[in-house]
Image 1 (tube, rainbow, N blue to C red):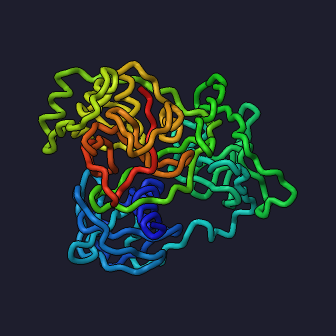
Image 2 (cartoon, rainbow, N blue to C red):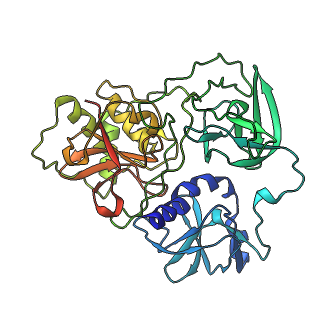
Image 3 (cartoon, rainbow, N blue to C red):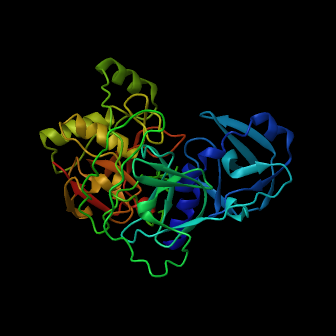
Length: 396
């Protein structure tokens, strides 16, 4: 199981954190015959194909040299062919002969910050608005180098070498051993600050009812749900960092029909002895109406782009239920139920309580509908031992 978790972290969640590296142009890759693995925090997955239905083939280590045989564009992303049925996203490979060095080796940085939030993990944000997570999280005791600092509305923010930002209330400056520092167990409030516009202070939401009071941004499910691996549940976002206000986008019946018509996977019949309630059926119908909608990390727009928690949030909104944005915040939306006692409309979660990274809507008959990962679209899947949910929550 531990090996399975490491496999998923290298291929899913880490893939999201590496999106910033996708600026590499295709013609550069075609001109190069060699490449170097640039991901420094774990193994990089080699997939059997860049298309939907891919499976892990093998794994690459940091700074490992590879030969780029060919390139291919899939869903706007460049993939490198390393051999027969061996493909890696270009975001994890630096084309050329130079050895990729982890950013942490930069010697010019003098200051460091160490995560001091012990009840969960600290989110690294794209900017000081605290509106867009980068996909990077700092567990308690993790130390990172600082390249910039901002003091806004009484809140100090530190910029890391990854270009992400963390609030000072969650970290300790220049004390990597946390000597004499009391760990933070209750998530402190953080006031998001817009970079170019005047904003109003937003109060932090209450922590979800889970063993670890920390909502997290989910990572997508593995590409092949029948042979997927189970990732580690080691990261979560402090509850006190306010998520941005959501804009509810409605989808007309005609656009939903168009979406359903373009997908090759039809919604399954719900064959179960437990009949969904009226509201639960509304949730299920709304989720199934999005089959074929592309996965977009952080996506909340039906018919255009959704991620896993965005799909769940949208579907429940159609039944008049307002859910929070990310997976761990959605954990506290209802009552925990056993996986042996599921009812249609229940929310399935993968990962530990307070650190879930993926969720889906159970539709009955051992099946669920979810937004899997980049490169795929909303679809249905069957519960299996290869990708078993960790727990479930009943909202309706």
